Length: 408
Image (cartoon, rainbow, N blue to C red; front, side, top):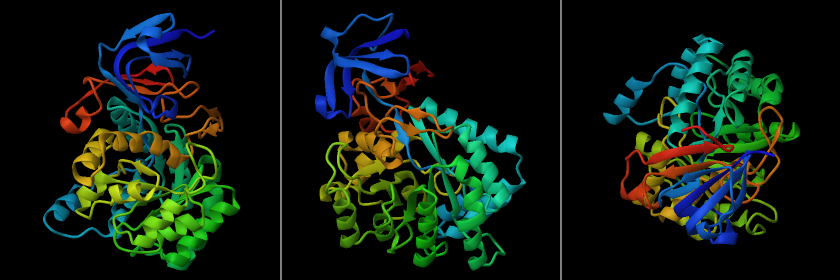
C-alpha cells in the first residue's frame, strides 16, 4: 500500500467538484500514491502516514496550462520592443523563431523546454501542453514532437503554423497533411492549425483538421486572433477540443461555442469545443481582450492558458493570467480559477480518467480535487484564491504537489 499524506487545516479548498459546491472551508485532503483518496472537513479527516499543516491557507488544483509553444530556440526581444513602440503584430514573425529552432540541437531544445517547465511548476502549473510548429520541416517537427513528448503532459502538432519562408503554400500544405503528420503522429495527441490571415485560410485549415481526424487524432484551432474569421465555426463543425485566442467574435461565434455544450452536463453527455482565452498574449500583442465574460454568460465552457512562446506571450504565469481575467476581462475569481484548472483539463480531454500521456500510459483526471483525480495541488501563501487578483503579481505559491509528490 502507498504511503498516505494528509494536507490538513486548509482554510479554503477549491475542488472544482460539484459534490462539494466547488469549494470547502476548514478542509483537508488525503493523498495516497499519485491520487486523491479523500476530501472533506478537517474535523473528519482520516489518519495518515504523514501530515502537512496548511495553517489556514488556501489550496487549489494545480494550474492546467492547455496552450503553450515551448519547443523553440532564440529570442524575439526586438520584435516585442518594436510592438511596444507601435508596430502591429503579424503572423510572419514566427519565421524568426523557426530559423533559430532549426539551428538548435535536440539537447538545446530539450534544455530550454525543461527550463520553462520548471519555471511554470514553481508557480503552480502541474499539467502542461505544448505545440510543435517552430520546425516546419519533417525532420524538425519530428524532433520537436519527440523532445516534447519526453517532458510535458500533452503534445500538439502545429505544422500548420505558418508557411515557411520561401516555400510554396500548396506544396507545404501537402507536406503538413501527409508526410509530416505521419512522422509526428506517434508522439502527439492532437493537431492544431493557425486559421488566420497571413497563415492558413478556411479551406487549408479544414484540410488540416480532416487529415488529423482521418488519423484518429483530436484537433484544436488557433482562431479569431487577428480579426473576424472562420476559426470558431471550423472548430465547432469538426468537433475540435478547443478554439484558442478569440479576440474577435461575432454573435454567431459565441452562440456556436455555447450550443456545442448543449448536451453536456457536469462531465456527462457529448462534449463541445472549449473557448480558450489567452490574456497574456492579448496584452503583449495589444489586441482586444477576448470576451471571456460574454462567453461564460452565453453558456460556453472557458479555459485560460498562458500561450507561453518567445514572440507574443513570453510568460508561463497562470496566476498572472487569472489576475488579468478578473481585473480586465470581467470574470469572478472563482470563474477564472476554474477556467485555469478544470477548464484547461477539459480543453485537453484530461478532465476524465484514463486519458493517455505521450508515452501511451493511462492517467487519472486532472484539474479538480476529488477522489480518484491525480493529486495535483498548490498551496497559496494566502487564506483565499481571491488574493490571486487582490494581490496581482505577488509570488503567492508556497508549495506544489504533482501526482502526490511535492515538487516545490
